[in-house]
Length: 167
Ligand code: ADP
Picture (cartoon, rainbow, N blue to C red):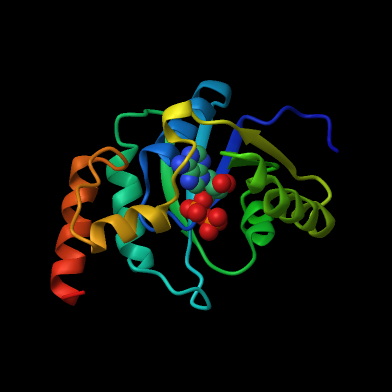
């Protein structure tokens, strides 16, 4: 690992849509690093509810009050994005022990592809440990309020999306 200290960290994910749990992780990362880039994955192989552009817009809106956080979009391998931008720290959120299986696998995979990279795991506030974007979408699809899980603007977008789809 090179000797220079890392000032920038990337927090990658689908953010389909960004939740209060994601936002909590960005707040925590922003206290630790000079700059945090929330990187929205544009992966055509994955089925998303919101397009990559919509997800980027939502993330941008959600983090606008955090001066040292910014949003970006990436496609292809995350390690290529990191290399291109000379970034060596990845942030991931750990909610429950069952997240660890997948997250450890992913971190090892990224480290094999790019040995200079370190993954930093952050734990959100207890209020946010039990839900994921997929559950929030299911609640919204069934017509219930999601205000406890996402920002009001995003709750509105979810409502519109599912009304439009009619399911
Ligand atoms: P991915 O498809 O890459 O897992 P997600 O948007 O689902 O993308 O998650 C991005 C990161 O945020 C992951 O590390 C995930 O564990 C974390 N995360 C997801 N939901 C929450 C939450 N409620 N609280 C804290 N971290 C979360």
